[in-house]
Image (cartoon, rainbow over all chains, first blue to last red; front, side):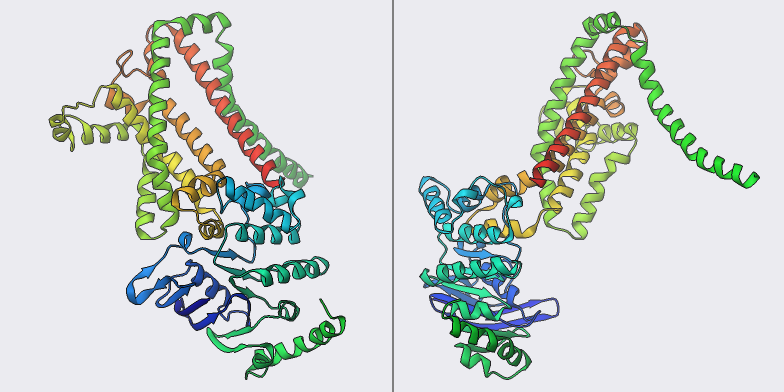
Length: 244
Length: 269
């Protein structure tokens, strides 16, 4: 369980969010500039929080009232930013093992490479990978560190259509089997369907609606309506094909 | 007809200017190398003045480089991470020794660390007398060379992708691990270039050393000072040491070029 109450002010933008995320994936949607990436960075500890509290599995990561703020390196929150931020000077294997040094860590990293089908790329540098491969390496790197929560910022946005389908299926399966809360930012209705996860709709720095897709769709506002529009077709396709 | 002639002249003039520039830069070095026979070189390098100066220069530039790295790296890192008015003031201060004339640097060092200088009494009480010692040579070299390193390293650190450091943090890496496994390897070209340029500048340091450390064989007489001294008696060691320094400078440049090229190849791989 990841519980958070955040009040973030950046420039002229204000983010005010209270959420409670159960284990398993939650999808974060919203128009550009809604504060999605800022929310992820605030949970990570990369953005100063004016007021608020973050509690992850009973551990307080942040409590401004009590002056508690764990540094990012002690929060155990996995983060996959939009551009993956892979270490360009390290091989795929070294990237994945970065968060778990030591012999045990190497074993875990090896298992993670195997699980995501990356073993044959182990010695390559990130610069020599395709978009889909980079995304998988970033996911493997975050998971190999044994995080207590996972934050994914538009994990599929940069991929071409073919790669996106297969990577999406892999991502959905991986996140479903994880026993930790994960927050996935996306613009793509098909991701929502594939992840079959509860939604949070963020708009203008505020949670407009949250819950299952059916509830969020009926939320007032333009974005919910456009979400409904883009989502109805893939939803039907998904239902027809059974499994996307 | 005249217009075409002018046009032709207009095309030839810049080429002529460029050629002249190359000449001005190349002719002195060519003259130095041509006037030095292999025998001159061997005799010159065997001269007692030369050996002592070579040893002293190697020692002092190694120590000043070590000081530059140890003190300059944290400063460069701080400058890159804390942009603002204070950082800009520090950056200007760091740049000053690059543009200040060496004689001014020498006088400034004397007024700071000399017996009657700002910190002189303090140093005297501690039992230290800096001027005209080998330590003074190191200090003069540090003063004139560290800015090259700090500037280059800070610029490299500024170019780092912030998200890589946040990714490292999200994977549990503390400050030391982030610096040594992510920031430093990724900033290597800038750091190495700065260190090499700084070292070369320290090796060539003359004016400030002469004023602040003097010209004592074996104690403060570095290569440039030995060349200057030899001019008055025997030209051979002066020529030999000069050729040696040109070769060393060339080696530094080639090394830097190679390092940057291999870095570019690595980045593309």
